[in-house]
Image 1 (cartoon, rainbow, N blue to C red):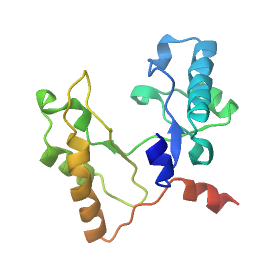
Image 2: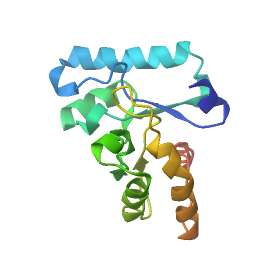
Image 3: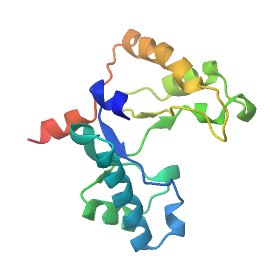
Length: 155
């Protein structure tokens, strides 16, 4: 987290323990969002923090979005997930992750990728795919922007 923030990237809230929000009460969902916010601040995220929240598993409802909005966060979802987190055991390859990303490429697209792999695996399919995705984005005339630019446009 510190190296991401130090590199100038923004950090959003994704919950403290990544639960299924439908399984929680409103109070439980509030605790998850607030605990993650406190943990990020305590870890030194400071100025890198954004007012964006992504629901675990993209499991949202209008009522839950309202709850998160009430805590000062805007729900930000994604256009596609590369699914690199599934790893080769889940049928994913770097080529497939790149293809998923590029098939969804359009103005305003938001791509979800993961830092690591699930269930203790060590594969980093998304990290391997990222340079190819960035090159293809550029080759197609698009550019990557920081979601914080949405906040600057509001001022």
